[in-house]
Length: 157
Image (cartoon, rainbow, N blue to C red; front, top):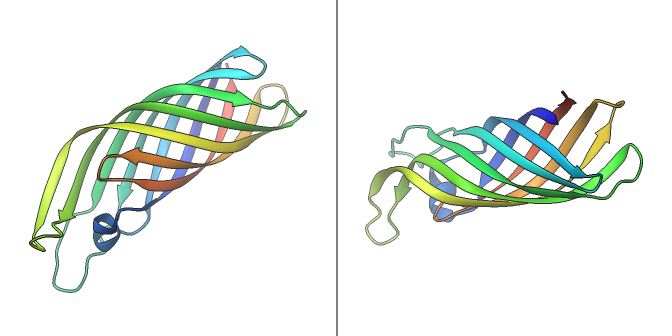
């Protein structure tokens, strides 16, 4: 079993989010269980804060997302350098402001939304029990889509 800790950079894709927020930064805690040398089950708990960056004259609070997802990772074993693809799904609790495209009014939204995240990345093993992991991912949350990068460390327990 592996335990991981990572930092994230996440950039909003939706126009309404890009108008109000800059690139978000966060942290993740991950658990990973190898089913075979090429296949792992993953579970991740994450937090991202998006700094408010609205147009002049508009006031909004920082946005926040807390994500709980699980899924799988398919690994191409190539020695210490191991490329992978992964997908996970679960739920994200959001606290975000939106600009209505019809009325230009601002409203705050909070609630829990279905989330799915395809990833592509690599693990670089530093020995038998530790690896650096880097990946890029698409974060699919209805009305709150974003793209992100993750840099973390995995440690065997």
